[in-house]
Length: 443
Ligand SMILES: *Cc1c(COP(=O)(O)O)cnc(C)c1O
Image 1 (cartoon, rainbow, N blue to C red):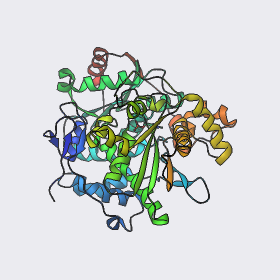
Image 2: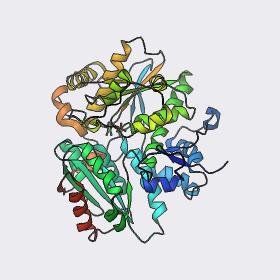
Image 3: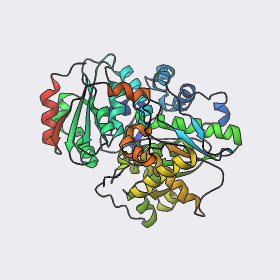
Image 4: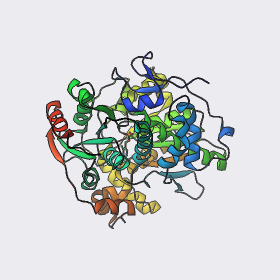
């Protein structure tokens, strides 16, 4: 087998190997890296693998083949997948379950991708003299997960950009409690502004000259690909127990998590339907309905980590399904308003004794709506739980009328002091902040 290449969504002739694609983040033409071919993973080849690190090594092997990272793959996946992703049945017959992706250090699913990316980049940087600067725009959870994954890792600096006042107080603590090689910027603007700034920074000659830049957003292949692993694990567990494919309802914003699920299905895993649950930022549901792609400014909602009006990873979905009918056959999408999210949090607690974060509740609500529609296929359904409810306790506690217990992971973070710099939403401000303080960064 020849080494796997990854091509830009905008130009199939522009390719990179796995490690290079991770370091670059974005392809040089502004496109996103996607695999040039799709290895098939026959289910027999995964027999005996049920733990995440082993399964991750099997799933990622064809993508890393021929890359300098290949030899270290098993140690990389052990380093990254060091916490579980349990599948919790909601009803006794197991027809509906919740996939809990929030048992990592910052209590959201982004810990998986961030930890894998960190494990890879640290191994790629060991012989470099220049530091690598990771720019990350976050609508809430990305920044915390990336900061946690890279904090105190040698040779790497992190700049986290978040929309000032638009993340929950709990999230803000996680974005600003690091120091050392991690610096946090509160941008006076929206998440889309933060994302635009990161994209502009990448093509800014002054910044590029100063240090090597990389992104750790869900646009980075190294964040996205490992997310296919928990879909593989969950669908295999269901297949082994019930001999039925698993269908997933994925809380979606920038579509990184959803594309990982689509990729897992493409690799041959037993996955049926994939449903994208969006909040009031309805760009994707509207597109699937009308066929017109109309990105728009994001609107703030209770499920703030999904407040994305122009989801970057749509480009990756389009690369797989260039025609609208193909896209419609591959995924469906729902938009859920804040009052429905609140009602679903209440009902989830009353009906199942479950405490859901607003993002998970968005997916649970989409599942309910789907259940009432003829489109829903029979079989096993999984609502994806993307964050621990304690991260959104300001929203959740009044709805369920009790305190949400703080997981140990978050308790540790909350004990740390916080620091951050406020900047305007323009490149000049970011450039000044980055160039001005770069020399003082220690790693
Ligand atoms: C980031 C995030 C999402 C959205 O994931 P995308 O990959 O951007 O679609 C959903 N829920 C939570 C809790 C998140 O942090």
